[in-house]
Image 1: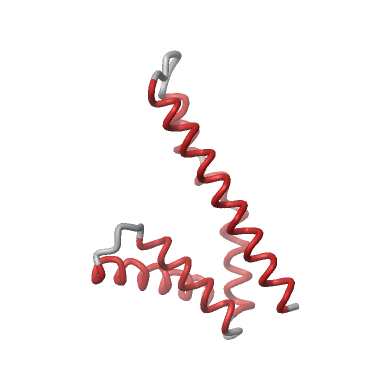
Image 2: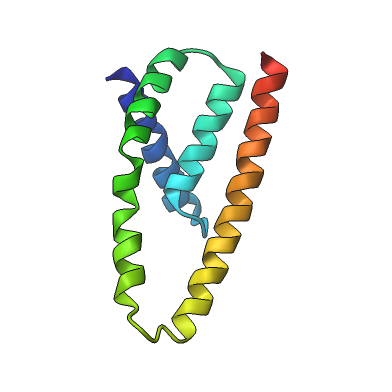
Length: 111
């Protein structure tokens, strides 16, 4: 339960920071970056956060259902929406791969 509270606290801190600073990025992303910084420089609560993250990851496919419904909703002739969708997916894939590789390098150095 403590891990969930910590994750939510960082998400809310990110939302508050975005609202106060007027940043043009989602607050959840800022919260995730804050959490990554916390985990990089501190070890308090790591086991609880790890257990909670593993539980959330078990249900990750359920979060992808709305995306699948949206793609199916495009219909037989998606037109210009398909190009934007593919571009978004490619950018998200590249950013995700870069982020994961950076985190893995940090973890490998700390181990």
